[in-house]
Length: 239
Image (cartoon, rainbow, N blue to C red; front, top):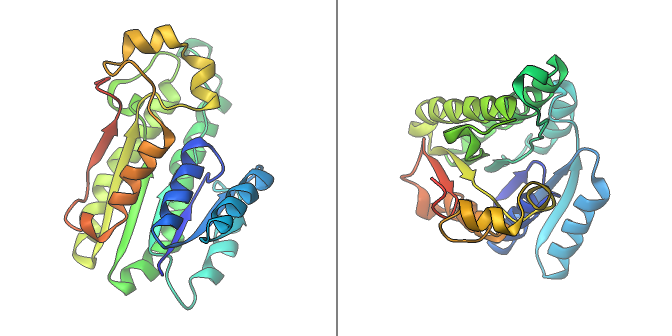
């Protein structure tokens, strides 16, 4: 049984990824920061189906907190599957954007990626097997009005994905990014109505979190051993 960590594991996509990895037979650490109760509900649902999971709580932007939580977990055995899913939106048109809105989004997506991945990288490398899967966005590929900060953060994550993939390929560790389009969630329901989705998406519907999770499940599996450094968008033909 391999161990997997999913940051931001209590949201729509994160919880679907946790359930998929648990169904694949992995022990899943469901990460939360402020949403511990929601993360525990994901764990309870996984265990009810016979899977193995537990909650871990820390702020991905706090390097000391990340290290204090994760280093004890990998002292004896590596966490070999990492899904960097934690991210936030601070949407506003650029002229009205405050520095704090820029910095908070960067902090979670980029500094959070660094803190968590850095804590798990060496144990993963020593095991000569690993999967790092970064949750990006179609906004990183096309841009989006009101999301200069978010697009920049996810674009930076894409570039980090490609560079880290080059560094770790010879160690048996793959690094890829998944870039979802419009996916069913509380967040997307507030931003896109059904008519807008019909107009924007060739498949005429929003994607399901489980469809994103299926892609992550594949990338985390031995079947994806020769796929690394890729930004794979799942968007119903949106781009």
